[in-house]
Each structure stands twice: as C-alpha cells, then as structure tokens.
View 1 (cartoon, rainbow, N blue to C red):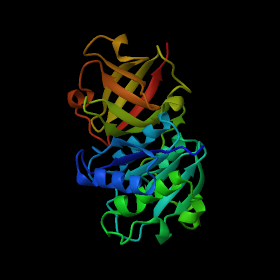
View 2 (view 1 turned 90 degrees about the vertical axis):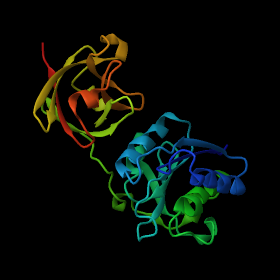
View 3 (view 1 turned 60 degrees about the vertical axis):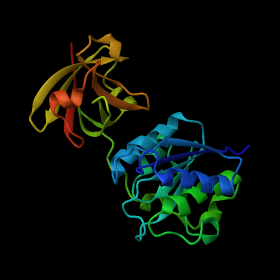
View 4 (view 1 turned 90 degrees about the horizontal axis):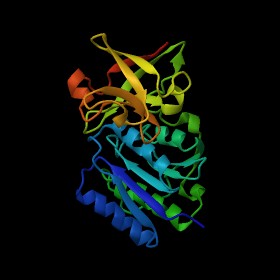
Length: 271
C-alpha cells in the first residue's frame, strides 16, 4: 500500500497563505492524501534551522516530506526529490536543506531532479516553488507515479552538502556547534545521540567548554530534566536523536549568553 502522508515545513510563518496554498494544490492532485503542517515557524531564510527541523520526520510514519526554506528560489539551484533507505521521500531545493534528514532516514537510496513540467503546476512562479514544484511532486509521488518520472536521476554525492557537519569524537573530546536554540533556551548540537553514547552514558559527568569566552561548565548526563533540581544545567538526548543542553525549568542560552553557531567542546569527566 502506498503511504499517503505528506508533511509540509517552511519558513513562511504560521497562517501565511502559502501554507494553505500548498495543501490545496496537493489535494487537487491527490485528494486521498493526508497533509500535516509540521512546522512553518522556521526562521526566515535559515537553511540550517530548516534542516534541523526536518530531521524530526524520522520519528514520523513513512511519507513524503516537503521542505521550503529557499533563499535561492528561481535561480539555477535544482529542485530535488531524495528517496531514502527507510522509504520516505524528501522534496525541496538542492541547498543542503534535506541532507541531514536523509541521514536520519537511513541515507539516500536515489535522488531525482524535479525537471518534468508534466508534474508541476503551470505556469511556475519564479518565487513560489513550494506551491508550483515541490508540493505537486509530493502529491504525484503519493498518487503513485514512479520517481524517475519526475526527472533525471542525480548522483547523491553531487548534491549540495548539509549546512552543518556531524561532530565526531577525537580522542576523549568532541567539538560541536549549536545548530538550534528553542523557545525555552535549550541548545541543540550537531551531535547525534548515538555518537555521544560511544564515550559517555547517562549518569556520567560532562565537562563543557564554550567558545568564545572559554567558559567551563560541568553538566550531568541525564535521561530527563527532572533528574536535576530546578535551575540546574544538564545534558541529555533530545526527542529526535540529537544532543540537547538545557536548564531544568530555565533558559540555558540566555543565562550563559550562547547563540546559534557558538562552538562547544565536550569531554567526559572520569571518575
């Protein structure tokens, strides 16, 4: 059975007419589909934040996931559909936006350029590819067309790279960067939870150094927030597979003056 789930994520802002316009186009093509507006509050033009948000589709059922954070709309950048090893499709611009999510979905099995005008909404607006190219591609895929009907196959190695690298251990320390800060002031790192677990386990203590400023903190590696007192900092696995640094019932970013892009060094304290 072909899944009919289509998710939409963008930097349009909640309530923007573009959100509903994409949904309407999808229903025109594939009325039996189920559309979920996953997130339209991504910071405008912020491909890095958009990529982080799209990673969350790995915790959803298999589906067709459209991402529209597209400052290069109307330029020579390609529109693409990535088929993942889990079975999902990621649809959006070839800007790196879709790459991290593809890794959370098992990696790329194939990629296609959205070049076939038959599967677009014509005429195509030069500034609204979400409505005229990406949403139709998702709808036609949900309807059952073959992905190769969308356009030529692409070499995954030649797609635009992810907007942030994945942190890896070097000896007993790991260099990370802050890729997202949520409304509660918690930090999210370019660090997979499974990578942290290679050298640290819940119950261990983690030494954290913040650059710039060379500030040092000592954090408990916890399973959940309530394992430390209110106002106390901790490090934990977030609910989508990355590593989060937070304060229980507090705002870590504001308290320690940390911004997106700041660099952190983590080291497990022994003993």
